[in-house]
Length: 261
Image (cartoon, rainbow, N blue to C red; front, side):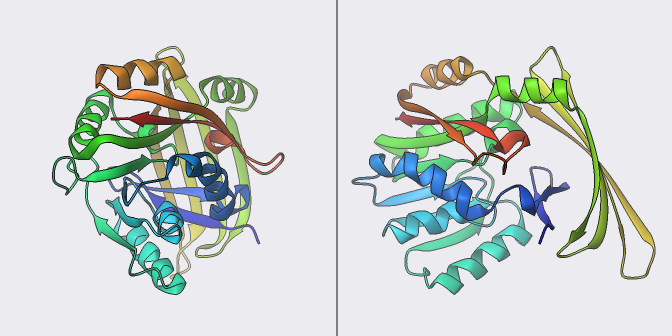
């Protein structure tokens, strides 16, 4: 059944995403198919902005010690429930922490991930700080995996459909009306998403939430240049596509990069 999945991003703002657009299993399987050939010899992994921990669990299933970091207690709580349900406590855990201050000693991590388009939430200054932290905690030869929305796909999509409205049944909020308005600022560099969600609160009153988010849209060559300036070397660059007819928006087409420290 279509529903709404709540998630938090930096700053603690609440946003929404349609459950019917994808499932975590589909996303994770597509990503792990790309990552798996590079994981030989990886003993431990940290997952930045891990959300409900789908990568944490996927790595743990391979016997890799796996720790997820996020700033949302709500999502971390969901992640811990999933870890317990799958019986993965011996190989995985989640921790509330900021990606700009990774709680790890220098050179102790084999693999670091920042997936699910999380990198685009950070400002230019924050992105630089994050990459410095990534280089600090990764061991020499360690792997850093991150993805971004496909720049061309997003700009084409916004030109075709910059506004979307709808009504659906939420698994947690009941009947929900939503409006998304997306625009490009600074040429095609910054995606601005204005989101309005309305639903009936338990007291019967209509609750309205208005949110404004800005996402940095990178071209692939910008990512490669940025990581090169931080002394990371590119190992692989792959398109990560959603199944036809299922995905849309920022998750429809992504580019996944693997860098070596």
